[in-house]
Image 1 (cartoon, rainbow, N blue to C red):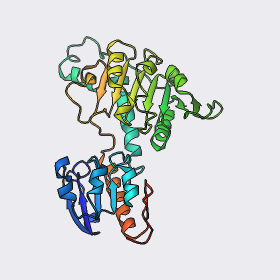
Image 2: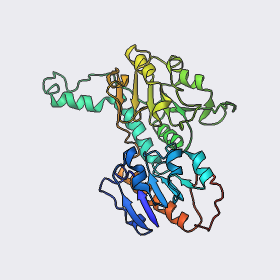
Image 3: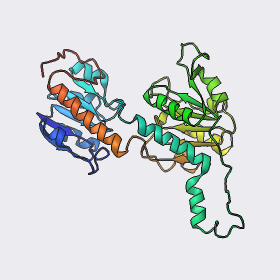
Amino acid sequence: MKIVVLDGFTLNPGDLNWEGLNSLGKLTVYDRTPSEKILERSAGAEIILTNKTVLGSDMLKSLPQLKYVGVLATGYNVIDIVTADRLGIVVTNIPAYSTWSVAQLTFALILEFCFHAQRHSDSVMNGKWSESIDFTFRDYQLIELASKTLGIIGFGNIGKKVCDIATAFGMNVIVASRPGSESTISSYPARVELPELLSRSDIVTVHCPLTPETTGMINIETIRLMKKSALLINTSRGPIVVEKDLAYALNEGIIAGAGLDVLSVEPPTEDNPLLKAKNCIITPHIAWATLEARTRLMEIAVQNVRAFIGGSPVNVVNQPSGYQKGKN
């Protein structure tokens, strides 16, 4: 069985191995595949694995041998699911592989705003502590998390783990209720409607999937509901935030700061307004990329392919027409 990995570098830049997949068929791995090379490299493949390389409707129709697409991520918007369904192509994803890592980066961003560790270290290295007449100095106001309110938008695996960590820090946690569901204040964490969450929270952290409903959810109108002292953290999906609105809010002091691991276009264009915004920390979409998380991702990817070949696919995200388990 011919297996093609279209963009394997971000998963495995050399510190993992492809032996698990190689044992399941004739494997070819490409570090990256530009759009004009997708058809050539995918021709004849029955199994394709991709992270960010887009397989749209026309491309799927041009690959008659294709039976299975394994997305090397949790989100699978790079695949035209409607066309895959119609063509009987099984599509799988990688769920819950990076929960701990994403929660960890969420608090790395929060804690950087609390203590400004890197900036203080830079000041020390530049001689400021040596020149100080006191045993200590502070270039920034320092923040304690205990008793602060953390508002979580999106309460799946990652949101729940962030809640656990916040609780250990002594924070009060509230969660955005889903549209159409009732708010609850008797349970912990309390579910409240989004406007209330934004107005009450000292820190708002986004962990919801990108959907038509969540696209642009954080915009100038919703940002204006937040406290002037509030922080916004986004380790979810870039297009949930209207970037020009957030940049304006940061530059005008409408909120105090933002920590982002995702942007609407990755890598960002040079004119992205957030690259020059005040009090904005941006990391290059690394929350998922710890060695431990990538190891789990690779293991699940192999399990997904093995299960498909065995006729009982797992982690299937679509409803392929005419597909019958046990007949591959």
